[in-house]
Length: 271
Image (cartoon, rainbow, N blue to C red; front, side, top):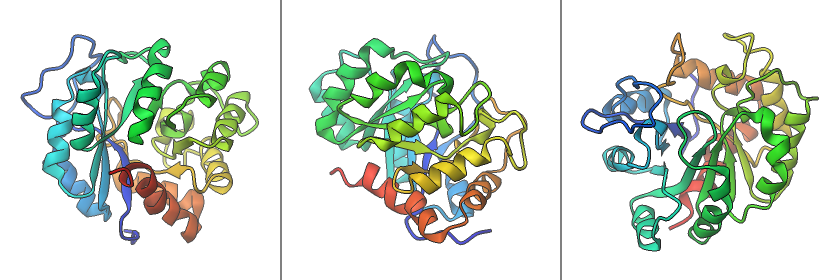
């Protein structure tokens, strides 16, 4: 097991606990993934910080995510899913509970739509929050101009989550890079299985994208386990996901930025 720097952060996990009903919009029944089980993952990998991302299956009901933030304790922040008409008082309550962003899932199961993105971004910007965006990265060129104008910080999931063939020469990957050239965009170097057509262990079609992003944007890259890897069969080992990312980079200073410095600035500096 690799020795991680102090403060290393897993920037995207989901918690599913018994007692929290799935929303009618849920597209699958999630695996058991309680906060106590993630503690074991965190301990095994040597991680000290984590971002709990609201699962699509719970819709606008953020209670499980908020409960996980409380259970996991020090070094935890969250990403919520909120209705477009949420009150300022509720946003403040979520902020005090540790929420630092709003999730937009532009794939099946997501509730927030493109037409509410700009308004929500404007409302959360004063809190220092980010828009956590998951989409088919192949559609980035058609949304790039709007995303570049967002008033809030933007975090793009899972290396862009390209659901079609992609290379570093692809228009869609170039669109991702242009967003990262701007002042307010980050990308998670996570879940290569979401885009890879070759698959493990090397994800050799996606590794060049990660190497390119880490080299060009060391201050804008993050890492996440995506635990418990919903709907991924067979379930990958978390240590393998972390090791794969580290091998793609093979630079200690860049790895520290990705694991420690960048998430600290993005999620933990806002009071």
